[in-house]
Image (tube, rainbow, N blue to C red):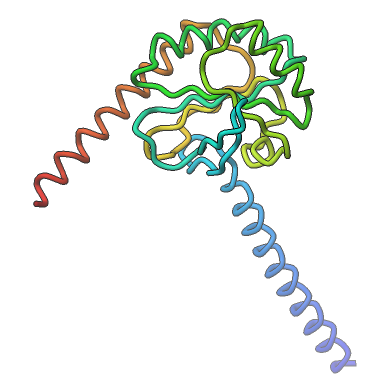
Length: 194
């Protein structure tokens, strides 16, 4: 009888230990997958996409300017509302901000996307996500979704949906200022190390 009780206790302890170890591994896997999200404070995924002339442009990584990356589709009503504001932002901040529109071509028709660009006279680069890789890497599930990425390739803002022109200007000016201060500090550090 004592032997049976000891065996039951041993089985119970070993089962508990196995469950405990698997829960830790599951928690680590969930933490790792959530860290892969392109969210503020994390490195933006890097890839190349073709523009409307099929010239490849790089997304992510270090750049000279702040980057506003806007995912959109031609059938998206909010994207239509946002298009004039994005055009204005690209003209106003063009010397300090790169703006790329990424058409979610796997969810859209390329002909309609091109018509959208012509209709709204979008003059900033439009990239075609024909295989859906960018949309997947940036975990975009609603349109429009935009990202502000600093010159070091770090996502600073994720903006789902449409915001006003004033809100865009506030966000862009905030991150341009921060980005420029960071560059100045890096330059000063480089000089002091020489």
